[in-house]
Length: 317
Length: 178
Image 1 (spheres, one colour):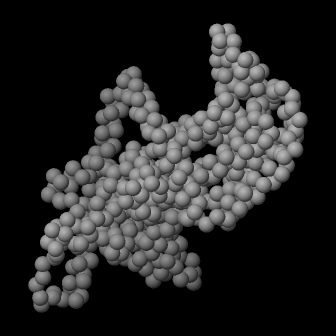
Image 2 (tube, rainbow over the protein chains, first blue to last red):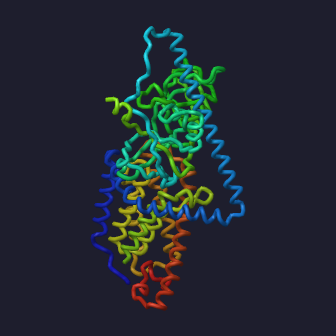
């Protein structure tokens, strides 16, 4: 079994170390492409793992004496979350209507009557299965999902929490798809690395996460959207809201939404709630901490907000 | 045969590290399956192969970590090289030594790569939590390594009895249990 130490061990080690050092200098876009290839290659293994996980959970539930109780608890939790989402959705719509009313009072009513045209681009929700789990420990980052560029995904696309009950409630309440039924939903993160068949989700708390945000203050008439700011991940359990001028009134409990003035995101989506707001003497901006609505993805699916050409407009043309 | 086993182990390790990392955690301590494969490569492969495997597995760990590529790859190569220089492999390591190598390798790679990443992105290193997490992860990984060796030894013994395969006599994981 004994063998002489290899002569090329030292040069090989030096060469591979140099290669590793060279890789640290590779641009992020190229590094992400390499990651995407490796993730795509691991897809069959993840599919097998997902099947095994489902079977294990089913077997555990079959043999658990509290299976019925657990199922009912889960259903109730889902229902509660659905109602929370519904509340947030109505609140966001109320905020938008408040904004329109304020603008109408300020600018007056237009002398010309117009009817709203069909939008050229309509939002679409793409469902994706969560393949990996999110774990911030030891620099692990990103949750793997089974959608990629083959499904039309691009980097920085918004990822929303999946709440099936919400859609049911929306439909039963007379809301149609493509309308602000999307608004008020919890943001999970953005699409990070995009492979052909897989992608990773960059969570809100990721140190590299940046997103346009808008503060919403609670008033007796509902919420009022305030100034635009930037939400930044910190690598910890909370996010930071920057660029909120000292002249703004901010208090703990205010809500943070995506910037709906941005034409790419027509509806406000919910980021989280302000948990700390400090204004140091002489400072030009607030120091705000935000608790994300979704700290960890605990469902097996998420929804990705994509856009497509409106078929009604295509037919009209 | 050893290389095929390591390819399989690295693939499974990658999938589990990415897909079941937190599900398998105990009190916040998670196993590092890719570092388990690294330990197997470091203790069972010849010098040259061990270094190449360290580079490949380090690269895979980099793929599932945030920040630049190459950091864990560098740390893994350096750690395996140090192990091979300090403990030349003239014969199979004794099981306790293999387990010790696994724990030390996992700990050193976890601490050095995490600290290096923090320094690269300009974040302060929280040494206390880093060392605690790394020690827990290394311990968990070493426990899995022990389980793997014992399982391999048991399977090899059974196969030896029925098949008498020579490869098992030599032992793909060091041969101590065969």
